[in-house]
Image (cartoon, rainbow, N blue to C red; front, side, top):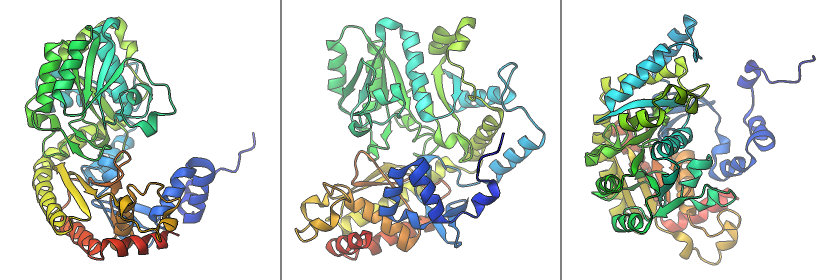
Length: 464
């Protein structure tokens, strides 16, 4: 058979940025291409990354405060992670092993049991946060039985884009075109009374409650003090399982290994992913109490109900094992707490200085959100034609302007949020220094010092 016109690895290295953009537009993600153009990301071609920095083809160093949406807790291309990958491949060790014991899957599962409190002793290994959420919902239903297969989730939540995960996600714009699962009920985040009253009003058909300790995609919304503890008590009272989604907040990001530990509770199931793979491999898990796992999947006939082909691959588990060691060896949990507190204080100083621009600064550790004032009401009629097509309601326009300005002028990468578009997320690797945090806040200060109206006018015209 004649080989088609495939791009080789060597040819990839020689691609020009407009060729890459063309492939995105015609073969990969045309909508994302438009967003990149608006934000100015289409002018940057990344060729490598190291530690806190992306490096582009012109050798510019871009400070990473996006952090792969929280996937890069140990930084880019950590030398210990690279060494693990090199050594693993050198000896032709087993990647896919479903017929025999897997040394690396066994070790990773044991290590996950060591870093989690209580009897969270069993892990099911998979590939992504959404898959972990799917698995958590599934094991909850298996444990509770088909009579208790309903779920409670919270408004402003995000748990993934696969079918069941989407069904317990509140974001309307990503679920409006899809038929979600029946029996998934939304409760206001932080409203303990509504949660308990809902349990009281239902027959005993609620099997589990799923909650984020910090709502990441919802705009870095931290659970009110005592809320998680109350959810735990209500779940126990009504014999429902508590699932805590730590996909974004886990592995030290908030200044604790897991964010739920701030309230000294023990969930029945937690979901983890993102930074477990050290920024190099896709690996995730849902970690269950022994009680839940043994009842749901403890029999020999149950093993086929939750296995996946690539869940527990040797190389990914080896990287995850080393990632956990790095987090402890380098004191990254304590570092996230210390630098995060310092960072938030400096950002709150900016809020006090520019109250007409910054509405709120919030977060925990190095999971930080900066919410801007809604500028849709202050755009003058003369400027409205300029923003047509950029943001129909103008909500979130200013956050986009700030992200664009940070990248183009100061070589800093920050993340937007999709549910609250007035928020930028700051999720740097946990290796960030105070000096780098200062550079971010000083750069924001320079941006805001231009004045709100001047920045909006100049930047929007620049987009066009």
